[in-house]
Each structure stands twice: as C-alpha cells, then as structure tokens.
Image (cartoon, rainbow, N blue to C red; front, side):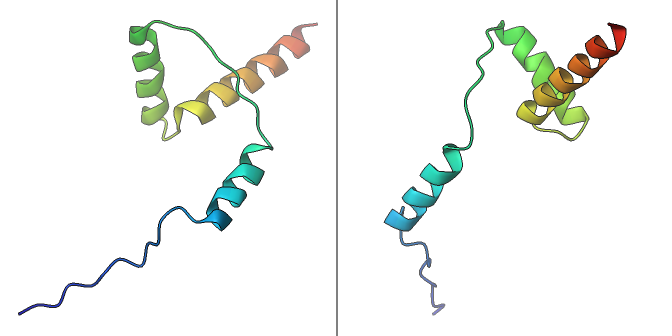
Length: 72
C-alpha cells in the first residue's frame, strides 16, 4: 500500500495576506476597454513574444512614449 503525502499547504495565512497587501499597494490599475477579438489578438501576440499581456502592454506604452518624445 502506498503512502500518500499530505500537502504542506496550510491555506491563505495572515502573513501571506499581509504580504500580498503590501505588494499590491505599490501598483495601480490602468483599465483599457477593447473588443474580445482585439484582446485575444493582443494576448496571442504577447504570447508569441514570450511576454505576459501586461508586460506587452507596458512595453508598448513605454516604446510609444519614447518615440513620441523623439518626434518633438
């Protein structure tokens, strides 16, 4: 008979809750509205580049801001 190991996961602890809260205090949300089709295209493109959707959007914004500044 095989022994089954119990998971060491003890649930969402108070320490984890506090750590998540401190982490999230460093960020704000920037919401963008788009069609589901456009969202899917953006997600697919980001995945092709090995990026998360969030990382891709931030990179796209940063690159556009630099390009716009250089045109001035």
